[in-house]
Structure formats: C-alpha cells, structure tokens
Amino acid sequence: MGVFLLLVVALPLCAYSVRHAIRDFRAVKAKNGAEKSAWKRFWNWPAGMIWSAYLLVFSFGLVLNNLVFD
Image 1: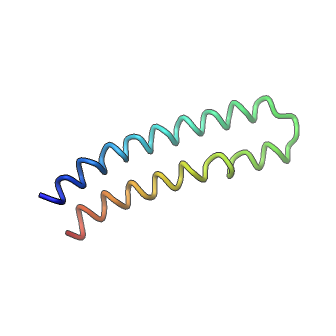
Image 2: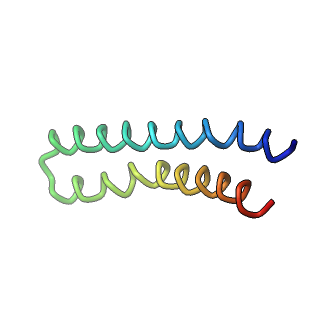
Image 3: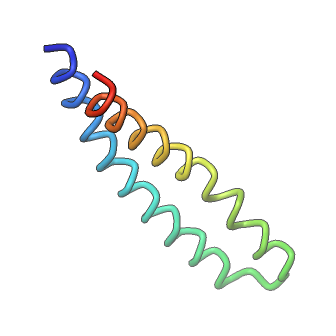
C-alpha cells in the first residue's frame, strides 16, 4: 500500500518536472534572444536549467526507487 501511495505522489511530480523544464527552457531561450552580451547568454543556460534538472532527476529517481527497489 505504501508503494502505491508513493507512486501516486511521484508520477504527478514527474509530469510537473517535465512541464517545468520545458517552460524554463523556453524562458531562457526567449531571454537569450533579447540579450546582447554573449557572456550573459552563455551563463543564462546553467543558471536557468539547474533547478529543472534537479527536479527531473529527483522525480524520476523517486519513481524508479518505488518501482524497482520495493
């Protein structure tokens, strides 16, 4: 029963993480279109995508942990 409840939480978290990553990717791309400095355009990617990557790794890891290691 516990695994089922964790999966009920983890699967929507995965969907949210993917949606957030796509939205963040588009926001950084739009921000870079207006930025003139190549240096700032380069640093917008890591700064903007670190949180999205963290969410994706955490949520997919949670699902994998609940499916495989129970």
